[in-house]
Image (cartoon, rainbow, N blue to C red; front, top):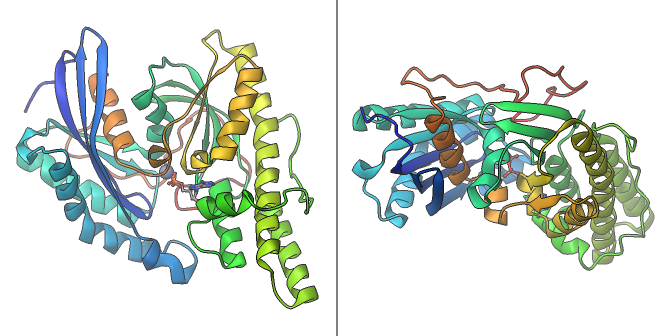
Length: 372
Ligand code: KG4
Ligand code: ZN
C-alpha cells in the first residue's frame, strides 16, 4: 500500500451517502512545503427527491436501496468528469457517520471494496465535520474558527479546533432549520426541498405581514425551531379556514415572514457566539457559515453583516458545496489522512457520531432526524 507523505500530489475520491443524496467527487490536492493547492475536479450529486416526495420525508429503506443502486454510477460519472481513471486514485474517503445506517453501509461497503481492490487507504469521515471543514476547501483558514452549521438535520454553533476536535457552544433543542423550511414548504404545498423555494418566494413576499414567535430568543447559544414551525402551520390553517384556501400572495408573505424570523434568531445567536469566541479564544476572528441552509443568500448576507460589525471575517462556500456533496468528504478525509488520523479496512459506520465528545448532549436533541 502507498505510504502517506505530505509533499505529494493526491487524487482523492470522496463518497457521500448518509441521507438522501448519493454523491461522488474527485479532488486533487497538491501539497509542497505546506503550500496546499486544492482542485475540485468533479462533484456529482444524485438527489433522491422524486423517490421520497410522496412520503413528505426521507424513507430510510428507499434511500438505502437507491444509494446501493447509484453509488457505482455516481462514482463512474465523477471519475469521467475528472478525466481520472480509477487506478490514478490515491485515497478513498467515505462518510461513515452520522446518518441513516442503510445509506452509510451502502457507501462504506462500496468504498471498502474499491480500497481493497486498488490497495489504497480508506478514511471514514464525519459528515458534520466535513461541512465544518468545507470552508477550508475554498479559503485559506487556520483553526480555531467559529462556525454555524445549519442544515436539514442539524444546527450547531461550534469552535472548530482540528480535524477531530470540536467544541460545541450550543444548538437546536428540537428541529433543524432546514427541516422547518422543508416541512413548511410541504404544508404550503410548494415543493421539496423547501429551502430554495421559500427563499425565492420570500423575495416577493411581505416579511412584516405575520409576526411569528422567536422561541429561546435569549443570550444562550441554544435554539428552538419547532414552535416557530407550528406557529406558521396554525397561521396557515387560520387563513385557509377564513378564506377557503391560500392566495399566492399569502404564501409569499408566509415565506417572507418565516424566513425573516429565522434570520432574526440566527443574528442574535451569532452575536452571542461571537461574544463567547472573543472572550475565550485568542485566535483570528473568523466566522464560517456552512451546511444546506447557508445556501440561502439572504441568511448569508445578514450574517455577514453581523460578522463585519464585530470585526470578524465572514467565510462560506458556494451553494453547491453548502448542501451535501462529496468534495467536502474527500477534502476532510485527506486532511485526516495527512494528520495520520485514518482508518483501515475494518472501518465501521457510526449512525450517531457527535462532533463534541465532551459537552453534554443538548436537551431534547437527538430525539429525531436522520443525522442526529
Ligand atoms: O446540508 P444539507 O444538504 O443536508 C443535511 O446535511 O441535512 O442540507 C439540506 C437542507 C434542506 O433542509 C434544505 O431545505 C436546506 O438545506 N436548504 C436551504 C436552502 N437550500 C437548501 N434552506 C434555506 N435556504 C436555501 N436556499
Ligand atoms: Zn449535510
